[in-house]
Image (cartoon, rainbow, N blue to C red; front, side, top):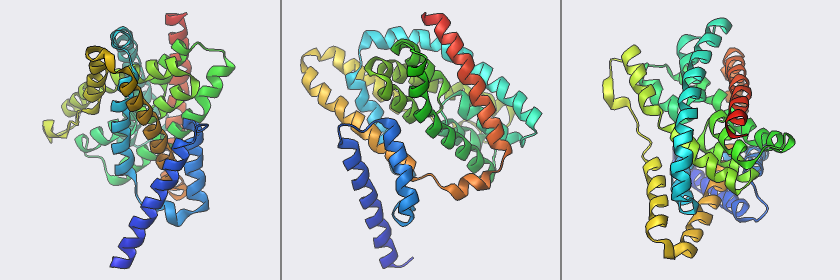
Length: 317
């Protein structure tokens, strides 16, 4: 790659970030709208959006989640994390078992099945990225699972707020439902933000409780498959940053106006993250994945979504 091409790549990347930032600071922009606009951008201007921004969106997600902690409440964290632990423990086990069963019925390739089941059970792309080297997954197995989860995340971000409002769910029910039934943290936060402030707080806290299950899941796969050992476990350290942010708001309660500024920055950062995620969707990669992984991913997602809603409504009615 010559210096001209490198300069063009960086120019396009900065232009994409600038467009996303302008969309994020617009008052009427929501999470679902941000991801739709990002995807529209990649359809209309593929050369601008063709550059990889995955590392940037991943970094922005982590920073935004930590900043969102400054808008949370410590007592709520304790309350919803305890209840969320019970719900997520149940959902993780059931989702993994259902995923393996459906993969066997549909005859999806074994390691692709494991990755999709792990991504659906815990935290989407992060779980897939953690489990993939442990089970020695091939590049195409990793890619197919990631694409399936990625597409379903985008759909969930758009559909969940619509369904939640159509069913007249309370913000407490919706926040718990979104945290359990949507894969990635970014889409959970985006859906919660689109539904309401309380839904956002609950969804974020319960989702991050669910994300901690990535550690025992990694240990399980090490026992089942891996010869590489402990070095492949990736602990989601940004969750600790999120908890630390909430703890700081409790200790320094006189700085609420400053904490509100940081919370607003986190919300805008999350909108920029969702825009970049939408802009990185590639139609050709979706086609390459084939039918079976999508049948598995969609079937598992629908079963988990319906089952989770029934359980959450019973618990919080």
